[in-house]
Amino acid sequence: MGFLTILIYIVLSFSIGTLLVIVPTGILNIKDAANYLDQNTLANFSSSATLILIGLIIILLALRYIQKMVLSTRQNKNISLESKEGKVNITVVAVEDMLKKMLEERDEVSHIKVKVSLKKKIISVQIKGYLNYEVNLVDFTKEIQEKVKEKLEILLGEDKKVEVNLQIRKITMSDKKENREEPEVPFRHY
Image (cartoon, rainbow, N blue to C red; front, side, top):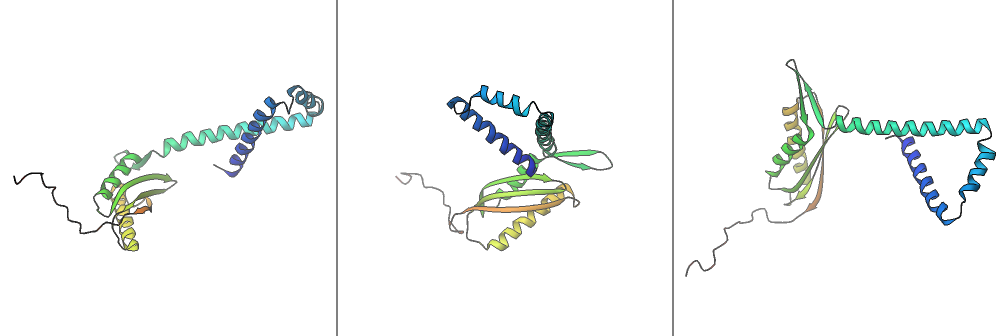
């Protein structure tokens, strides 16, 4: 969304909100405002034309924004691959699930959330999770990024550019060599 569109929406929202507060409190009388517009602004052709143009621009920008939203949601849900035999669409959710399962196999991380998004010709992967052990972060994150890139290149081909971002949300300090013994059944030896 462009800066101009955001600015217009902010100004429009602020104006409508202000009117909804001012009119019921009696600060602004609607009849007086209508008379002022009728006598000063709407009587002059250039003022009327300016207001009509501003209104049309706002409507067109709103329609353009809605169109971009609809098209981006349709396009960003599938990764398309083309070959001699035909076209293949892979949903972003399938890629996210595959990466999540791959990362859950590692003991070093937990509470993993993977989000894949498409930006033009770049596949952006956002991975969030908890780090369970004290490890060298530089080596660990580099290894995870390389494995994710490698997995996606195998799946999608090397022509797609992959960008992997990691966010470690919490570090839980548990022993790496934690002994996980079976719980003993109470009164077993009696």
